[in-house]
Length: 290
Image (cartoon, rainbow, N blue to C red; front, side, top):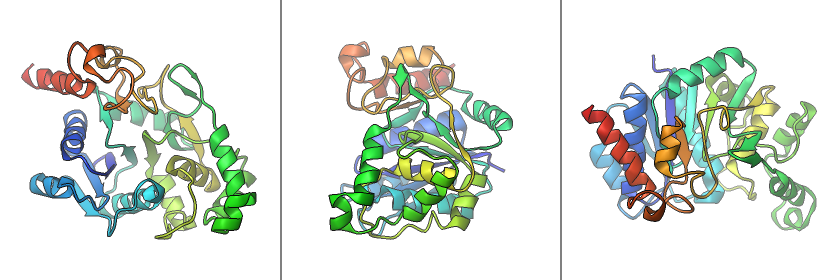
């Protein structure tokens, strides 16, 4: 049995997607199942993925491009496929512009879940790599879709029942595990499916971010959010850009990073003449030769 399945939503950018897939296989091994959800790309990304698809990949394609507002549905489809096609105990949701960067991730995950049995979703939760997290913008969005002009224009959001159940269990509006990369247990996904939280409408009038949605839904099914990131955990993520240059992150043994293509610490000027993605690829190539 594979202990872990990766769900990777893909938009345009074949080279980026294939490099991220390479990082997954390098550090998690070919026994890891990867569910790739192509967002009906039209730039050749889907065809490139299809041409090199491997036995441990499951490649599915959205019937039309859903974009960022449809990411909740895209990920719900990916999570359902992971439940249906694998027996993995852990699902890693990974952005196309995120990378796995060091060995030992699966072992760290299994150790974490062993001692945190009530955690359903975990990653960057309590703090970013160097500061407390703020959920205020998400709280304001939720309130505006419940009570403000958005409610008048768009109608009642589809997640009202989920929020109500979450708040009964102590959820604070807007709290979330950051969506660039996070982990979710099979138990959590099974509960979400039974609760109807993976039955997401094709067209929904909400701008709620997917990380807020799945974090909220996790609390609604009586599981907790957990912190599994810097300063003590293996994830070190920033919303845009990298917290440090690529080789520094690798040297400090961080195992998952996000936003390697745009923003601070991603360009050649910060990484010895290479892009951050190129540095991480070079490290993998050296690892293969050693």
